[in-house]
Length: 67
Image 1 (cartoon, rainbow, N blue to C red):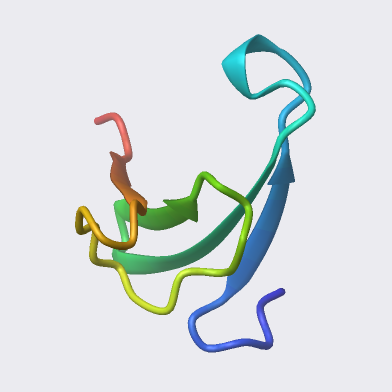
Image 2: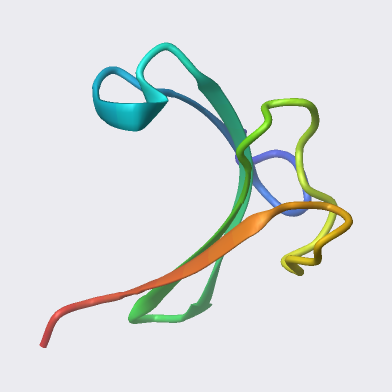
């Protein structure tokens, strides 16, 4: 949902360890070559920040474009 700030996405696992699970995430593009995603792997709520702490259990990943 690009209309939210930050944009949100709902991911449904099709295979592997997350098969059948729903992951809620927010994303942004910190640079032209990076995609940053913060996942709530419990599927309870969309993250409200890009910060992973023991309390919130979020999983933050930065994907970089291969050069």
